Length: 417
Image (cartoon, rainbow, N blue to C red; front, side):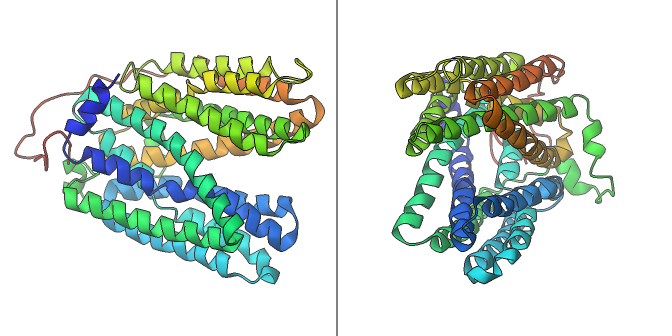
């Protein structure tokens, strides 16, 4: 079980890059909660809070390919610093708004989303170029696993700041974390001497290609659709848990069940890191099984399920999530052109954002009219479609593990330039 992690520890610069890249994304996991409390406190409306949060997500989705394109063509440290300054400025201004000025918040949120620091895209561009296939798969799996911890810690810290200080302080803290985390990651990338762009891309003049050109790569659109369906289904799971806990009069239970789901995902990622990363259909299919099992223990299938039973199902079903995400990231990185991987991962941000945005109203309607079981079952059906599509995704060619040539010097053993 620990062999893949030993490979990560043995690769120069990789452990620190992995750790700091995750810290650079911590702010994002608590941002929605902080904004919800802030705007709801101003307006008394959760609908308006959702509008502001959606503006942030839409901005991030639209800007994803553009940020990814920049990852492929510009020095990563400079890009991380510049985008974090823009993001922190937008979110910081939102935190400083007088309550009467709340209509400005969606505009600031959208602009901040456009400038969201591409820490994940930079990191995955590095993982995708690892010449050691086992270390590459372990990096994707470790990232997907540890991200689940961020989704536990981030909202918890944001909620704590809201309770102890104010919602304004929580939003401002997210802005500061975005700036400091991105700057720290930029410093680590700079000191490591690593580049996210391949040598060929650094030596060629900037090409004025359409931002859609990368989507012509064989299999790339299929992987993006699989990711969109997967995230859409996971959005359904989140909404189902919140709705069921709220309907039974214990809204705080939703946080506990969400944490249990995240723990299950972390356990799955821990045990499957670096193992069979190309078995994409199987891993996505296991997510389908988890959601179907969840549907079978919720109303109206079971009138009054025990929270312990629901938690157990979430724990078991959650074990498939991080491995499925890791396999999807790995396949996307392998299929993308070497000089456009950052752009491909930018499109992944757009695809997953679209998946969640499309699924949310559908799941809401199912919850209102048919109940949690139907909503969870529909999520399972959606990811089943992703499983079928995953079987059509081509396998990438095996990596070429040749030593670095004089024309393409390696700045450090084990990591590409």
